[in-house]
Amino acid sequence: MLPDKQTRIPQQCCVHGQRAVPRGMWDPQVCLPSQLRLEDGTMPKKAKPAGTGQEEGPAPCKQPKAEAAGAPLALNFDSPSGFFESFISPVQTETFFKEFWEQKPLLIQREDPALAAYHQALFRLSDLKSLCGRGLYYGRDVNVCRCVHGKKKVLNKDGKVHFLQLRKDFDQKRATIQFHQPQRFKDELWRIQEKLECYFGSLVGSNVYITPAGSQGLPPHYDDVEVFILQLEGQKHWRLYHPTVPLAREYSLEAEDRLGRPAHEFTLKAGDLLYFPRGTIHQADTPPGLAHSTHLTISTYQSSSWGDFLLDTISGLVFDAAKEDVAFRAGIPRQLLLQVETTADARRRLSGFLRTLADRLEGTNQLLSSDMKKDFVMNRLPPFHVGDGAALSTPGGQLPRLDSIVRLRYKDHIVLTVMPDQGGSDETQEKMVYIYHSLQNRRETHMMGSEETEAHGLRFPLSHVDALKQIWSSSAISVKDLKLATDEEKESLALSLWTECLLQVV
Image (tube, rainbow, N blue to C red):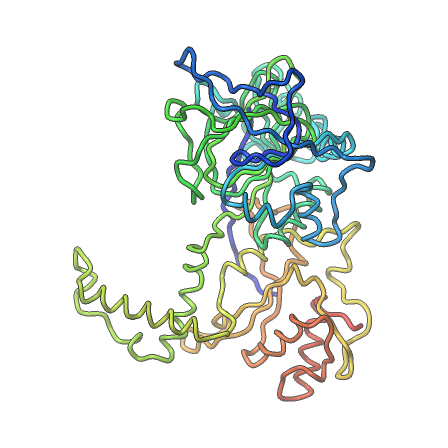
């Protein structure tokens, strides 16, 4: 066990928007080859912007239909890549990352009753009654809010959530119910998000938004996460606007009078999926005269940019360089910290050090230190399982011996990194190899921010890194072939991984 504490920044995300567009797959920038016409043969028109009497926005792009022929469009849980391919079907994964990811929105509208029924079963308004009986609290688990004159009005009560009061605010105050991280309670959402965390290698959070007819929960805003929207019940009218901060690093509201006309406007129905990049300004409402809307916001890639990775990696590079190069250990000039501005000489020295670090990085294939890896694996979901999950905590099968053939288990739930010895003194600070895994993570605290989390895993001397890389890169390997000095070390390494439920004999 590797005890540690980590807090997670709660992910901010959407609620929402009135116009139906043809059902199908939508690229807001480039029309797909197939075209679909409305029944009257005309293109749909955008709503007139406030303050103008004549001008109309451009029509949404036409879309080919994505109707299922026969069998329902099923999600494939066999592997992370297979799951994501089915999740965004009929769009190809290669097309998605080449044309849409971090670039522009994608709308997939499907005429598939079976898929719509699957979405509806993920979370319903009627689920709230039983969930309230499990001890929900305002703020932590549920927010009650409404957008009034372009501003968010929070209607939370104090303490525990009672269903009758929640339903009263929903019906009488036309308030939106925002349910935080429903994967803590709903098994199928745990199953979906666990596969997405494996696929992206990044934390995946979610919120459910339930909005009455003719109401809007949140004002226009943008998020610091990549967003996937699943429409579960009813319909939601959406308006998307061009980013003012592409690939934004923080959540922010946008004033109504600065928005202009929507770049895209459409209505989601049960079974539909919408993706848009972080920084995309959006708002959504439930159309009047219809039933309530329920949608699920799935979000990922918070603080997962190259800038974040550089900040995470550079401390380890400096640590290594300072051990080997005396120039990094030389003192800074006297009174440098008292200067109002950094001196030209100091800037030249820093530039030189950065060039040295770049050269060192390009010239090495060593495993780099990464707190991001540790943070991810400590806070992510455990592997999805049915039952008590005993297989995640109790080793099974044969004990590995020197002549055993072994392979890694739960590879998608393990990270390998090097870090200064956290158990050593400040004077020694030797590097160790750390293996962190999420097998013992608590689903109930996933993405809850203020909850304490604990690191689970093993640590080994740096001399074990090549042997561990062998295990990671092999589908199966003989214990005796591991790159360690003695047979005792080889067998001890295999036994340690087996005891942690990370290795099995084949």
